[in-house]
Image (tube, rainbow, N blue to C red; front, top):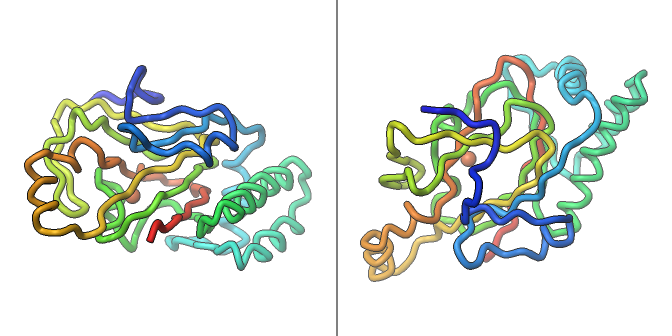
Length: 226
Ligand SMILES: [Fe+2]
């Protein structure tokens, strides 16, 4: 599978917006499954992730710090001697504040790989039996990868069958995106309709986390729709 550095050109499932305000206001209509704000950050977030991993004793764990626990991040920030790294922490805290103000249940994640649910490293769709918008930004590589819906053959639960030769795309560190998750159980008639029309195959955001040997930093949150 060919891997590309960024997003497909002229791809209608990704709606690119110009600023945070437009990011919040944009919906997924008519056919998008991603709203993307392209953003490049200054600062060494790899070094920050390493320092954070040491401070929180990450090891093989996955550390999740909720918005309500952000004082832990502030306490870590106090230990940093390097003002440039402290400013990187400010970026993360400001992002959490932004998402919180948008009614997103946000948390920061620090991890190398997903050990609790290793399938996160396979191409999948999120959120069975739920409808929500998932908000995310990754501060350092490797960032979330995805495939185009044109290459998706079948979606069943979280699982996806896709073309062997599907090109792989990925976001950039710093990008802010929200993905459309619409998996709440429907009536039997709607489910049959969805299957015949291949609605999920056409519209679900099919993505994976890359396996990393170094700590990754991101914020992730869901805005529930019901
Ligand atoms: Fe996922």
